[in-house]
Image (cartoon, rainbow over all chains, first blue to last red; front, side, top):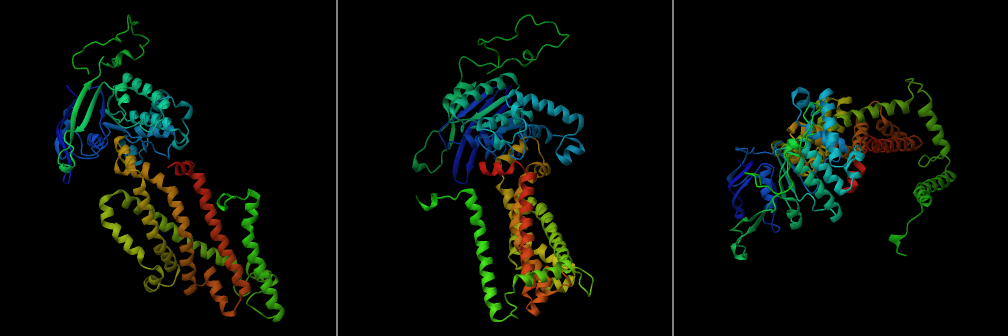
Length: 279
Length: 273
């Protein structure tokens, strides 16, 4: 069964139709890239997935339940800019992803963690910071980081919130090609190793094809000046990348416990295997 | 080389900064000497020896009638009023400014009211304050608070609205409530900017303080200079004005240092945005 289900979604502003008749099913652990010319509504679509905007018609469901009308912790996001908080250090930024979810009276009142819970979150934050390669910069502020490092930090922070779906809005668009290639490797590893379903908006086609399991193009079928916005964009292409990219099964990545039997073989294959619903 | 590209070396820059002060001082000394040569009893531009005598009388000798050293008595009374007024304004500005900037319902309700209220000239409200809360300390503190709070609140609300929308959405995707967004995202980011706007409001705060003291008080820096004005005591007024200016300047410097110390991230974040 698919994780995200978009049924007959339209988005209109006053007289202008931005998106029409969007139908989309996104599987668990898919990596979907949304591409299209600028102004075709792909960012609007992402905003609707995030509940920053509401569809004019149609429904968006995650796990078969309609999404909340406001942004919630089940959907994480990384923007091209302003994704991290300039008043917090690297560690503080990542930690915030857990602290803001803290329950109990102290968490609700102060938005902070205390004692053992905090120590646990700090350990987890350090692990994520290491995973994105920022361990040496733990106590720096975002203004002291390069653009690529800031986006790595934004990824770690979003992952700390344990979202079901990670939404990326042209996250690497402002980076130099070299840095971008590095962060692509990181992105692919993160996707491979964690239970992540990713929807990424990008205007960079090579990036879309390099990272995604599925590339979806938004386009206006009719775009005559005389139409005056009466026709919106819709999905015109829906490629699955071939050979299929299949993420590693999560349990294969956990190091075996001390008392576990020694694994006989690697439990997943590199080569494309067609498995049921995996995209 | 074009004028816009010619820069003084640091040492020259420091000397240049001193130049206007020295020029004013020199002009004063010359004019004072000229006037005193013509009329040794002239009170308008007293010599520095009269200043020294006046400062000694005001700052280092107890007043024979009350036993108080007047300059310190006045300074203490004025600063207490000023700090009380600024403290009230700051607290109201933080709470109301963040609430108006962050909550659309409150912005719709209070935004226009605060703007309209900030247009009322505070000094025109002074008679109302004297009538309603009396001539005591409360009226002076209230005048400062009434004068300084509306611009601070408006500035705070604008600074809150300046926080990129993405950050507010981002905080929500990390599970924050309205309250924790205000506490953990908005408040720490607007506090250094609040210090900036307090710096700008120091001038008006002093203005309201001196005005209130001039009209009705029994002590205070403003009270004193308006009192001795009757005797044309320029030898007291000018050192008092210099002292007030120095106090205001030191407060400004203190706020800058506090901002740098308490918000180490701020200077770079502002430079890079």
